[in-house]
Picture (spheres, rainbow, N blue to C red):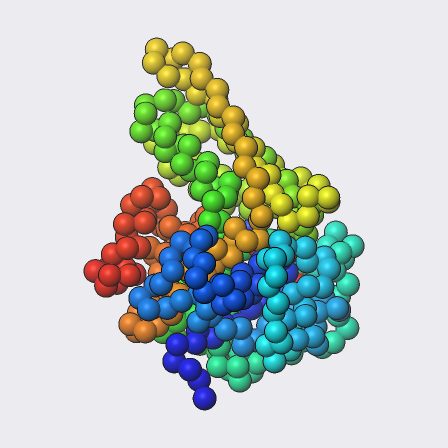
Length: 357
Ligand SMILES: NC(=O)c1ccc[n+]([C@@H]2O[C@H](COP(=O)([O-])OP(=O)(O)OC[C@H]3O[C@@H](n4cnc5c(N)ncnc54)[C@H](O)[C@@H]3O)[C@@H](O)[C@H]2O)c1
């Protein structure tokens, strides 16, 4: 029997973000007094510990066929380990997904492709009674991402959260399908809890509101995880979501570059460097540099636990389609971009029931 408090999630891509999400939820289950690091302890009665994985898909030979609790620790996964936290078996076996464009040669160096035939993804989703599918597959796996979106939205008729930058939630066809099927969408790409995008947007907003002209800026990111090995080889959609997240805030054109480098020994610890040239009163030159170091996948998971609960809240209320407020505050590339404070106010109104989406 299903516990009505449970939020049943299926996951595509059992990589570092999946590891951080599941181990992080276990951290809060095993330390119930500790709420540090949560954006919201409670969202309309839903706790992070209500989130339960019920299905998972991957294509890595070492992960497919394993219980999800073991698969999250198979290399090249290398996310931050929460001290003392043990993840007990879930009774959820990782199923073989459709490889499509998910494991190109530059990733095969790290990820041996499983030999199994792809499972019936829609059948597995339906049998698991998942409420939503979380998409955590590698950036630029556009075909595979759309296959998972189709399986969730059209096939199993469940919600879809797009954690990576393929434009699915921004696609009007998926938006119409979600309304027609009565399912919820959040995406595209996650704006991490306190990540490069959130900080760069805050700096850009500061320049704008203080009347300092922002002429050009770059953001360089490096880490040692598979995501960065992938982004170096094929990061086009990530450059787009990162740059538009910043330039869309400014009322005039800004020259912006983004860069990604793989530094193996850094594992999942990411460094972001922000570099900005501008001009203040009388066009006098101004230069700003800043640096962030953060556990990359934990930073993603801190946002995902809220996205999952916003989907559940919308389901509880019978609201379907794009959840605009959550998208605007929590994703890099929402269908409607808005300043972060405005997006946050919309989200507060959504939770209070004063705004439908
Ligand atoms: N802070 C962050 O880490 C962050 C922030 C925003 C967005 N993202 C995005 O989230 C996604 C996941 O990141 P990650 O660090 O977990 O990556 P990862 O490389 O550690 O994990 C990806 C997983 O997907 C699997 N996979 C590949 N093709 C597949 C397919 N067709 N079906 C099922 N599984 C498949 C791989 O085997 C691997 O286990 C990336 O697209 C990344 O850009 C991450």
